[in-house]
Length: 274
Image (cartoon, rainbow, N blue to C red; front, side, top):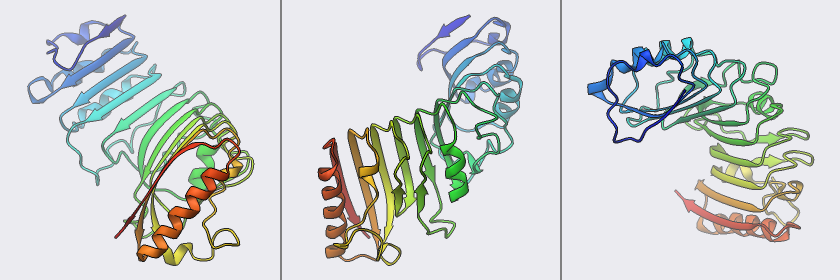
């Protein structure tokens, strides 16, 4: 029912005969063992699958469609091809609790099945979405059980330069959040993420879009003070179209916001000018 192996273990042919397996990790597949992917589709009792591949194989998508009892899915691809969205055609099982898709742009847009009525027990999500709009973030925020979120976007490459707002009442159970490659600003309104303890922002900062946003002293206001449970804050800003002085002002504003937070969260803030 449970098979845990490490990356150095070579799995022989015939794994498809283990039809009672419910947990399988970590299954490492390379060019010499690629035929094992087809056998995975026979393991229809799988609840947990953690798999590592050298590169994507289209047969894995067909396999995943057969695994309708999957609750935890972790896929790591060694060879990164960011412009291929290979899981767009996949629909997750309704009882999915954990999805970690590393190192590749899996989805062109937020999948339709990522909504509170279809995956109500989803607690951990790590995906890359090429195009993300405000309505998509609002949908994510309504997931009732989500506790950990890693979200990477590619909006800048697509010319989508507006920031996003985390609305009141959204992400009610979220404790950890990592927003990667978001276009600045990301604003947290009062009532959003009431349980959030750890926030990571790696954002693209455009001075021309950010001017006029923020507090009376000209500093940028993310609304960190609206996150009552915050304990740890990390921000990496990549400034385009900014002078060194403007970048330092942005860093000072974020530092001041963290220091003024009632919880005095530990914070790391770094600004890069391009």
